[in-house]
Length: 231
Image (cartoon, rainbow, N blue to C red):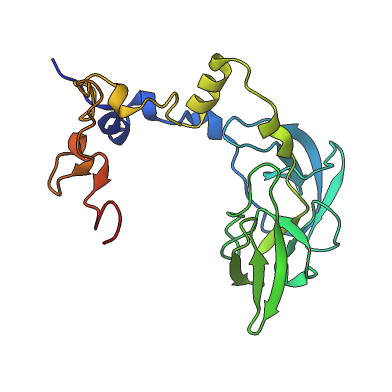
C-alpha cells in the first residue's frame, strides 16, 4: 500500500508538520500608551531565536525581544529618551541609530528585525514624513515616520556559535519551529516515497514537473521557462 510523500504530508498539515502552539505562547508587540515600563523577567521562548523581555506598564504586560544589556528590574521608557531598549517613533530618532522590532505600519506592534543579534540603521529622512531604514542585508526600506521601533541591538547574537552537540537537541528545536529535519535527498529515497526515488544506480530522473501534475508529483522544477545554459 502506498503512502503520501513528504511534500504531500507537509501540504496536508498533519500533526507531524504542525508547529507546536505552546512554542508561540508569547506574542511580541507594543502597548498603545506611553510611559515607563519595567522589565519583570527575561524569557526563553522556543518559537523565537532571541530572549524575550516581559514588561509591565500600567498593569498591562507585553513582550519585546531583549536588547544587549537588558537586566531584570531595569526600566525602559516608551515615547521619549534615546536610551537602549526605549521605544520611540522613528521620526524622533537620530540618523545612524541602531533599531529593532520595527513596525511596518504604525500601530502593528513591530514586524521587522526580530531575530537574535540583528539590528537595522536609520538611514535618511524624506519629505512627507518618510524615513529610510537600512536593513542588515543593506537594502533600503522606506517607512512612515510614525512607525515605532526599539533602540539597540537584539541580544542572543552568539547563539549560532554554540553547537547543538547532539542530534536529539537539534530534533526538538526544529520540531518546535515546524522545520523539516533531517532533510533527506530525494534520490536517496525509495521509489515509493518520492518520484525521484530509487534511481536505479542513481540515474536521476527528469526534474521538470508537468503543468497538470498532481500534488505528489509536482516536485523539482515547476514548469521553468528554461533549464541549462542560454544558447
